[in-house]
Image 1 (spheres, rainbow, N blue to C red):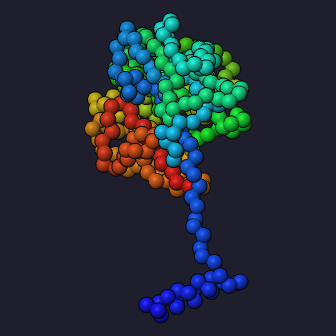
Image 2 (image 1 turned 180 degrees about the horizontal axis):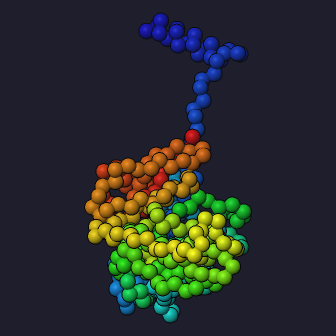
Image 3 (image 1 turned 30 degrees about the vertical axis):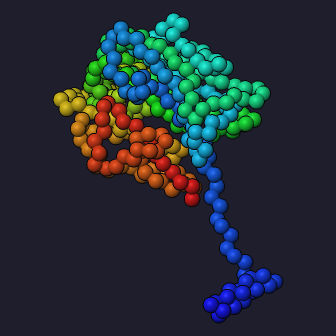
Length: 344
């Protein structure tokens, strides 16, 4: 016993002498940054089967996830633009209820669709919010006779104190389903008119006959009015009722044969319904949707990339409580998976 004590005393003396090695400092882990999820649901679901004439109540919540979960926090400012197809659903008059301080505005978007804004801004000390905060509810009447539509969160953010920077945020959109037969409208932007087309949910859309515009040739079709997101008829399945916008280039196409018209290719219609697996990369590089035949398990999952982070896996929920593995079968028409990350 004395020998052990003598050895310990010698070691203690050595550690206290000048120039002696100091004990290794404990590596401190940086506190987890808050992550906010903007969520749109009906009866707690992100996908709802509806019928023409139905009135539904959409619930908008913001959930905060970090190490101090359930502690509450102070909200200084947030914004969300909820885009919807006004030909499929229309807001019910006086059907919106919000928390105090929430400003709402409904405006028409350029081209097609509308956006319902729900915003909050404090010029003083902010307001106390819960980690799972109900922001508001609003009622919609279903007018769509067939097909699918989505209510999408756009340009959403929660700002840090001072409103100069935003926290990391993701979202859960809402899908409304009437039937598999989706309607596609063509906005030819000055060209000859085209009839609406139909395509089954999850199937390819046949390319339409090229519209005609004197002195111009068709350069492609886009999903947005500003012509930033091209539509690929060969690989991209139809996931909802939508509008495609024509892009034009002046002059004749270089590869066009004189006097020939482009015929719309025949696309076989498969009887097996499909489901869509969407990936929320949570700040990583965007990942393309995966389409599967209904009842088919997911054989492979993509590995997203994010600078400065290590990918931990895919989860069914934004809070990363329910992992999703290969071999599992996605349910319903659309399943969204959320990427989990760890800082390097």
